[in-house]
Image (tube, rainbow, N blue to C red):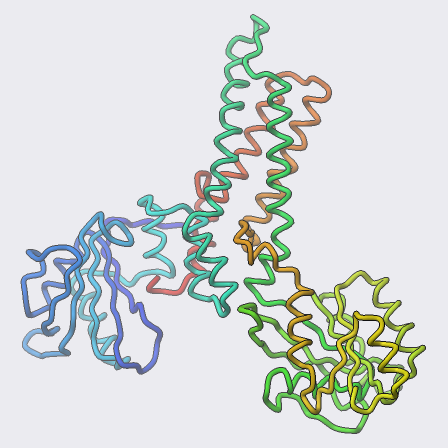
Length: 458
């Protein structure tokens, strides 16, 4: 997709969701935004009013009144896009909003492309590329944690960290480049020990950002949490109890769940995607066997497994053997003893002594709050809670990996005393990848790909 700017155009789009509502908001941005709106607005002369003011009047198509509206005026550069902006608040009829937009297009505006308002704000230096992407994350955030992470990025927390790293590296890059200009004189402006120390420091910070992606990704997209166990362990009952609705069919017949059932729940401000799966057992039923295969695949992809044991039916020795097997897989899991109200005293006391089991009755709703606290503790969201910088964007994660690799080559070059031109090449490559994150280094394809994912009107 080609990246087009067309900054001389005045663009228009519906900024509120499609469908019937109390109001609809139509946004224009560009050199002629105020003048075009003034041509169809009957009230105050908008070309004469001050910025950041709101005016009541009517929108008219010739002599025909389309609606009574409020028009907000924002003059450049004190606006979101740093261009002239008007926002028309009309009644929320989809037909009416489209009529007003068509009228403005006939006056000379053109329909905005997806993300074009934010794209213009970026091009005019309102914020960097990472902050622009955070706007889309704020719009799509469906939990407190996702919103907090996006807000931190939009307010420049992540960008400040990247720029700080880049500025330090730019200084040494310029010193190494300067050496190349005096190649015949064998001078050294960039102290190699200082450069090595800086690169090692940058590597630690970048590695910490890379490591934070695991937490940042689950905060943004939800923690995939698989509910697993043998047939009739109470998996579907637990899902229904957590969601407080009859999402999954519950039956005494083993193998009722043949495929996985998924739904979301917010715990402690974090979104969890709970996935109820088919019971794990050997079976000759073809359909059930496919369900078991999918369960095993989901368990490998999960960030957390809630593994249920039927304390009424499963022997203690088998329960402990299964726990040992799960521990060897390396995936975070919580062993859950279900039907605690029907368990023998021996089983209950043995599992209580271990201290790592959640002992519940999903059907009776006993100790579910304790289980929720264990789920939150197991996900290890300390970085989110302490306000540390988190990487939530796959593009940023990829650029950080490439930066780390380039800095690794710098260290390898220093170890074998390579010449300044080779050092400069690897340092420039690291600067390039860091610059891609904030938009200091961009390509048309990159920008087109990013902004095409925004909604129209933003």
